[in-house]
Image (cartoon, rainbow, N blue to C red; front, side, top):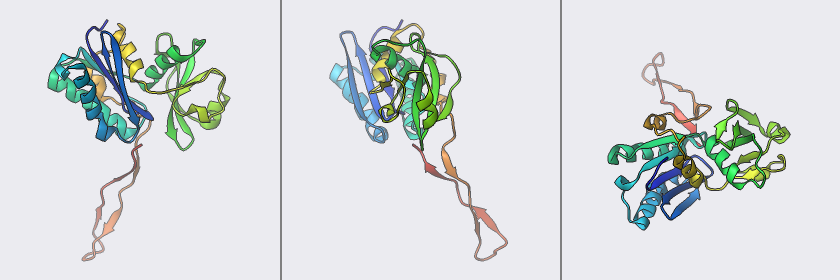
Length: 234
């Protein structure tokens, strides 16, 4: 079981959050998705300064590895790697589904043994995985479901943005998830393995446009490829 100050952050969700566990309290900061690349380091610094700590004083750093915002996940995992390499603090990562399961277990009035953790994949698609909230463990592989499929499920649902869906009773709308990650980090089951920080869980590749052939004005028979352009990173 981890002891000492712990830092956790979730940068792939609709609400980006950073939480610092101290002996007598948990401090949390949150901001909307889209600002993580500009504000994550400032949020971490604010929590550390407020507690009178430096990165080397931490007992561990944890990050959510997705699924979620492509850009947000890259920012968060890269930051965790940087803290690990710069200060030698141990680090690890868990899936967003695991953190959502922990969130459900804490917030649900009468928790069910199996729930469906979901992450908005946009365009009426959702990343989903059956989870056992008591152990924050998977009860099946992740997949991608339509809005209609979600609304037909008989399982309780936990995730950001589900209040807009017509899902089963007992659903839990997610808020900031970093404090729930701290609970996992304090347990004896958290995977303290920095290699997980280079394995984001995307579940699908970023949307990109294929390269286009550009004809040379001097010689129409010659063509070069324009570089691929990322169409959407969220």
